[in-house]
Length: 264
Image 1 (cartoon, rainbow, N blue to C red):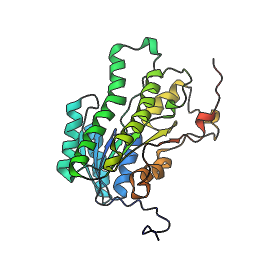
Image 2: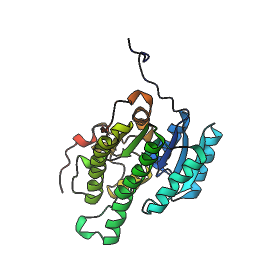
Image 3: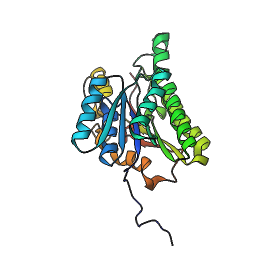
């Protein structure tokens, strides 16, 4: 007989310590609220300190624990310092949500070298450095952990609308997830990814504007999902119930990637 309850669906995060990057708005802010509501102590990391402090105050008012940590996703020292800050406040970080990212919104041949470096830095180099820093400390502490990288359906489909480098970095994130899952499996560190489609967020506001408004009429379910509809997947990947899941990339796109768009 198994010692696990039936059904084994625990999502209790009491005693866990999480870092959420890109937590100043959009999906990152929602991820932080969800983790805190389930008992995790959360370090909120991003550039906009005022927004982080407001979110930390909101989480505390709701009975959770959170700190605001200003972080530059392109600066390795800043990334490592963010892990230091989380550890000093709450203890060893055992949940990392690698959410910080940026779109390029330009044709590949029109991108400046500075923008290329920035997109690669925020979307790929930063998540790699953070994942390795968190894993290193977990291995030294002999503790298990969960890392969730935020990829995109752009990893699976690109229609040539001016975000080629973004798509490349999100494919790299998916492959990074698979490779690091293998590397750290012996240490009980699970590495998974979520590949969201178009969700309502600060990042997609500009996309809607370029497309002439909210494009829900062109989508299979005639809607653009909201961040709340990702809660259950996030919790599944960081909670005890998914202890055997590692190296997976879960697509959450409300059927969007099945749409065939006519080329202009």
